[in-house]
Length: 197
Image (cartoon, rainbow, N blue to C red; front, side):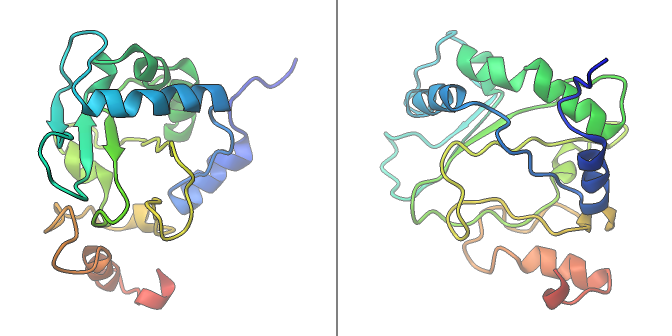
């Protein structure tokens, strides 16, 4: 009998130790290209299913240079994105990482960040799902462009999933202070210095 699990026991252990897991080649190039092709039309208001997303922040008609676009509930607006967001593979990985018998979608979020857009403040995603009980979630972040250090990548603080659950960050888009400020306060409260984060 062959192992058909989408991730290994070693990957699951690493996730529980670090609080995050990098899964190489989660999606094939054709799927990524198809997703990328849908981003601009979505932010231009072209909703394939005719259903608006739950939230739609920023569009090209606002005339705000450098503004970040964000949508939530986009799975109901576009079949290409829905096929990935609701995929069996991501559901299986989530269940394995959460040690659950199954999984279901709590929400999705699509971001479009142009060059020069402000950073997103480091935060714990679970603070935004306070209404969910028990407050246990697994988040799958998928880069649709090359993720290189210092250019719109995501950052994790190894082990921070063991920290006390934070309050909502003071400024989601870091415009007046460092995007690391809230994280540094949480690290300090946990007895860690910046050099260890």
